[in-house]
Amino acid sequence: MTGQEQQSDPTSEINKKQLSAENNFIEVNGFNVHYRVAGSGEPLVVLLHGSFLSIRSWRNVFERLAETTTVMAFDRPAFGLTSRPLPSKETGVSYTPEAQSDLIIELIKKLGFKKAVLVGNSTGGTLALLTALRSPQHVTGLVLAGAMIYSGYATSEVPAPMKPAMKALTPLFSRLMKFLITKLYDKNIRGFWHNKERLGDDVLAAFRSDLMIGDWSRTFWELFLETHHLRLDERLKTMSLPSLVMTGEHDLTVKTEESIRLADELPNAELVVVPDCGHLPQEEQPEAFILAVRKFLKKI
Image 1: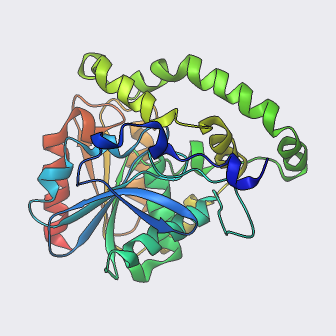
Image 2: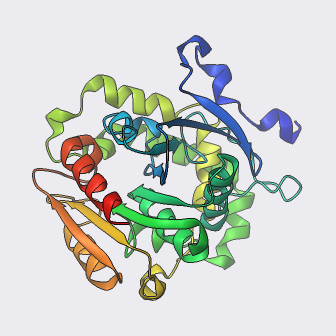
């Protein structure tokens, strides 16, 4: 089987008639990236969703934010309708955090902008901060909502001595990962919400469908293999860009105390704690999320 045959094309597995004119695809760094853009003017606001989710996570705030500026959201590699090619030195396809950071910058440029405000939730917040540290000349400001900085994706690491063996056993491990994620997916996603009744069964099913496309467990495994400790806690004090740290009052995924610590240690940062809310303020409290982001944008 050739590498081309192994790659899955998510759009071939959905009813393309369901894709509205608001859905677009663009080639960036070996990926066919699915994105939406709306609004006009500056700054460009880029929305970065968390793991196991998709562009859908911004549905309650996207249009409202676009009333006052240009807003772009996209499916991160390994999620949603963005293509899922296998890593390759020949094509440059990579799932490392640094490669994802590079993709964000290239996407900003391809849309005709030089800079953007990065709004990241959960692991999207990890990538937002990483991108700002690596390419501050292309970032105007940061909104970090339940961002994983001191735990989870930002601090996990596959031990280097084990990586070759794990790669060699990719078929086995990817099948195991598929079994575990499929079994635990609904419980895991519901855990992002403080009030579970706010997550409708239809939305949960849609998120599941967004993830489980094609050979999704293989590309998720490739993403997992590239995790490594980013040392963001050691580097964030060099950040001078204006930042808004947002957390749900009842966030159990990235504990509220971690976001409070981030706001304290990140220079030029302000903190917003959203009441009656878990890990996803844009989902549970969209009005509070919009208000906080708009207020922040006016200051920068």
